[in-house]
Every structure is written in C-alpha cells, then in structure tokens.
Length: 127
Image (cartoon, rainbow, N blue to C red; front, side, top):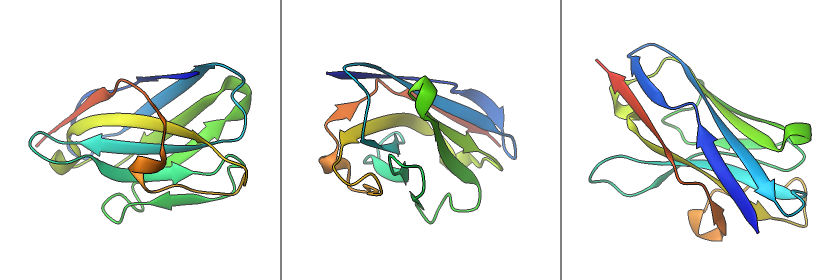
C-alpha cells in the first residue's frame, strides 16, 4: 500500500507563490503516475495537474496552465506542485493522487482512475 502525505499549503496573498509537496511511502514506489486535484468549499473536486512516471509528460487544467508546474523527484519519492501568480479562486484543499501504471509515459486526468490519495493540504489565497 502506498501512503501519500501532502505539505506546503498555507495562506498567501494574491500574486504570491507556494510549492506543495507530496511524499510517498510504503511499498516500492515504482511506476506510479501522479496527479494533483483540488476541492473548493461547496464545489466538486477538480483536476489540476498530472505527471507521468517518467516525468516526460504533464497535463494541466486550463485554469492553472502557465502558472502551475508539476514535477517529481523519483529518488525522494516526492512530487511537487509549484504554484505561481496565485489567485483567490485557487483557494481549495489540494490533494495528490497516485496510480500504478504499466506505461511509464501515461498521464491520468480522471480522478476515478487513482487508487491512492493523500489527506489534503489547505491553500488559501487572499485578495
């Protein structure tokens, strides 16, 4: 079983930056596609960004494209979400997710395809 722990959330002013981390532990963390999702109060959870195991392929929601960057450090079993030019509408609980894949180049956008989830970290952007 893979355990995921997010960190790095907090309160930031609009235009600021935060970097979220998602550390994986447990069974051998190999060949896992990773994703970031978020859920704002009163809204459904939505896709933010995803990354292939190889790290060669990434996908972003239109709302964060050009502002957020997903990356990973395989040696540290950690995936990151660098968030720049933050807006109040980015306020949400951010979750990382992992799914074992055979194709190391596969990127997963659909939240229902992920079996492993972290507990979430709160990001609040003030105007």
